[in-house]
Amino acid sequence: KGQGKSLNAKLLCIELKIPIIIVNKSIPKDVNFIKFFNDIKQNYCFFVDEFEKLFSEKGRSNENTDYHEQDVFLSFMDGVLTNKHKVLFLLTTNESVSEYFINRPSRVKFLQEYNELSEEIFDMIVSDKLVNKKFREDLEDSVSLINLNIDLLISIIEDINLFKRPFSKFKENYNY
Image (cartoon, rainbow, N blue to C red; front, side, top):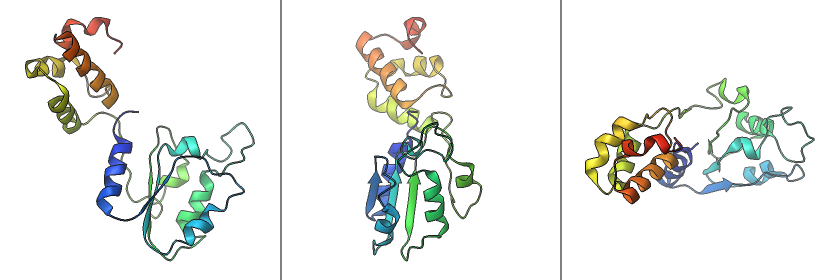
């Protein structure tokens, strides 16, 4: 969480310059959304943020679900329900998805895992948000990119700016 998955997906959508369909709610089973998407007569991007929250893995949910599950997307992606136009699927997740999504390159060609905050993102945020640049080196020495996310980094920098002190001076009392 907080590693920049959604931001990167949104930036990619903008750069593609094709229509974007954003799904942000679970879709009831009585809605034939695949027919709706197959009726679209142009290329588009199908973006689902936090996919695992909106579409549970078949058989994983303890309750009888009235919403479409991940297996519907597998059929759609495999061409069982064909589409004449190109569809780019962008799915972000904080948890695992069905192993069948990633076990074949014909389904998922590109997979980006976010295990730690990149140095590039760290540098961009620090350069943009840290008021007193003399605290930068202390911040770099006081945090680890492995257990740091964007939200936490911004919070730490806001507190450095507020207290006007290097992070090492209040790190022990910080919830980090």
